[in-house]
Length: 242
Ligand SMILES: CC(C)(COP(=O)(O)OP(=O)(O)OC[C@H]1O[C@@H](n2cnc3c(N)ncnc32)[C@H](O)[C@@H]1OP(=O)(O)O)[C@@H](O)C(=O)NCCC(=O)NCCS
Image 1 (tube, rainbow, N blue to C red):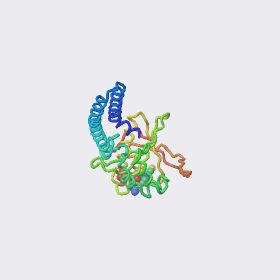
Image 2 (image 1 turned 90 degrees about the horizontal axis):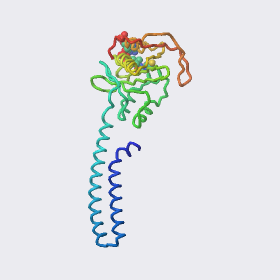
Image 3 (image 1 turned 180 degrees about the horizontal axis):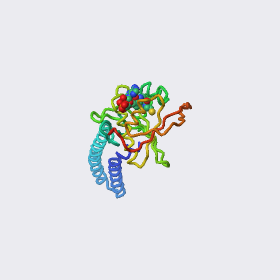
Image 4 (image 1 turned 90 degrees about the vertical axis):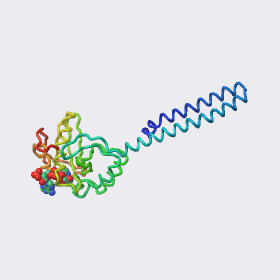
């Protein structure tokens, strides 16, 4: 609503000003008790208001078109690599985002079964906090999601990744770990990641992105389930260019 008001502030102000001017002129002539002047003023006011309305309507149409084009255009990249481009999720990404969430993603992250539908709705309305789209660097297609939780006092970003079922095994996760660490480093943050002992694909993707194992930690999911997770830390050198 605030955005709508801000966008249409100029035409709204123009119309309000025109109406105020007309009202003032009529008031002045009315007070002067001059019926001919009042009639002439009413005539001029009618023409003037018609012109102002037409200009305002044209302005509103142009502003609406600009806003619509903005919605259609994918948001600007946060960072680009050879394999992937990471960018904020746009309002049109809902269906593509939902397609990246399958049972493996739900299981690995202990997410409820309606996550895909919820994500679709959320993206339509607003950005999902800390989620960014992983896009193929050539086609721009959304292939997965990267999550980065920024811990400001510790200057640490915790990385999470999933790749859609049709896109796995093509190097997207490896490219993303490298690019995300580079992004965080540029913002003055270290990057860490946790993964389950069984998730060898994610472990390998982290290593390919320049992460090293630093031990194991207890990880508590939102569901309350506790696992012994492997902790990774980025040490700067990556053999994947992202
Ligand atoms: C784990 C996941 C992110 C990996 O993404 P990906 O894009 O397929 O990974 P990459 O293509 O970059 O491959 C990374 C490495 O894993 C290997 N790999 C890929 N799929 C694998 C699988 N199913 N089993 C074992 N290794 C696998 C690749 O060969 C590659 O190793 P290499 O460099 O030695 O060849 C993806 O499978 C996924 O989203 N899974 C479901 C959700 C999930 O587990 N998220 C991680 C939570 S911590």
